Image (cartoon, rainbow, N blue to C red):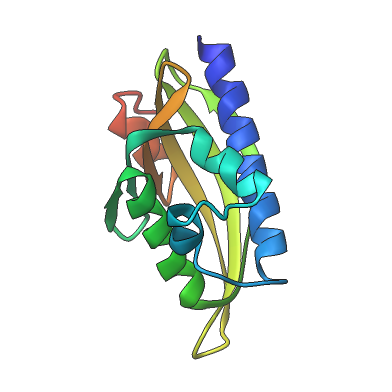
Length: 151
């Protein structure tokens, strides 16, 4: 199951990177598109990998629950940005249910125009081929500690 989880996480975050690249050509609310059934194929692919009760805790501690809740969180992030992209840097199997995904996030603030970049160490919990939880950390050590794999 671990190899399958790594493959699912790799496809998921690769698709998110693609979605964000095309998003800026025609910005729109992701949650509205999801509610109205107007997701494009890549967006649908992202949603299909999420468990209906998925829980996402972003790097600043905000928690979003359920697919639509997560879409609302994405909308909030994108509304605060002039541009936002992610690059998948690493995917590593941690144990039966957990995968570490390292992404480089870059963007510009909507009001300030200030550019910023951060590497996120994202702990992805999976069950039965679906992503059930996503927790973002600023360091690998924090992510590993969260699953009892301190370095």
